Length: 489
Image (cartoon, rainbow, N blue to C red; front, side, top):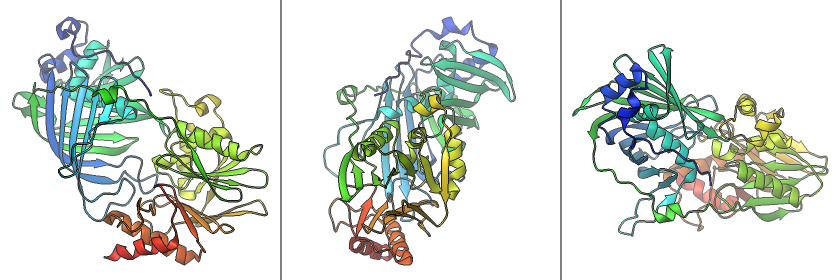
């Protein structure tokens, strides 16, 4: 688990640090009440967006309505709690994101080195225990110090440097030893924009830019009336602020279960689906390994570097003494693409839909200075083989067919894998069978099932087994057909 040590900010006496700072930082401290505000809460509504789940790599992240958004922070203890209620109709926006309908409540918390989520209780059932989420610690902690008052406090306690910039004064500093923050303070002492960078396994040192506009007095607190954040250049949050409270009671402490949490080891389980074909499971995202005459083909290296490393290692264990020559990426969504740089470092040719080629070329070159991965050190070039509606990989004996799903609202570059010999179809996201056969799908998932079924019929594929890249079991066309039939109900 990544441990990030942040010096506790805000508990030091601000007055002793102010004298050493520039006039811009002092002006901001006075205008925003940084010295007197120890805790802060703001509420609003608007949208957030499913980061990494756009329909094509060039489009914006899909939007989700946020009915209510409440952020409570304690600057002295470095803690923040965000509660939001999201709302979705029966038809999701084009692109990805976890399917849901109706209202969805989320509670996201950070305190020092710990981050966790608080799952909602179901009906009258007891509240489930908090879920540790260490991978979100950095992003949430930087979000705390990117708030206007938080930014000023962090600047005053981290030897900020200043220089003239368009729109005001640029204020820069580093927290936690290596995490850079840069902001623009205007002539009124208002923080207009804050840029931070977080590590992403695909796009590397990813900029997170938060823009603040429409400052006004909320009961004695100067605060923006609108917050817009972008990640990797696309909007990720857009909130209109309706209320701000200074110094409310905000007491956040990491539960023992979160403090004592140890991430489980990466586990790759295998199931042989035919001679030289293995279905790799053991986590939330699955892969496929196919043995060819003199090489290996792997389909999907998902999630992150550890998962991808384990999948690639398992492929070479299952098929010793043969290189991994091709890695097929089903589509560009980040949860399925998280280990693609490990495949590039392996020297494999990346097979993808042609609309994803430019994005993968960019991914191969993205700087990874915050958390360098093996490709950042080796600097190997990328080899990409782009396909259109259909692609074929063959060794003269075995054939692997790649087919583009058409009319698919989840993503525009989805390639499903078909093995004619085994009559096996491997697919991510289009149809994840419920844990128990016969359980109805939630409404947003039904059209995807119909799309997959319609494509199988259009392509005249003889499919006996469907290996989904999510879920806990394989399925068949009969079950898919029943799920597809409910999409019009």
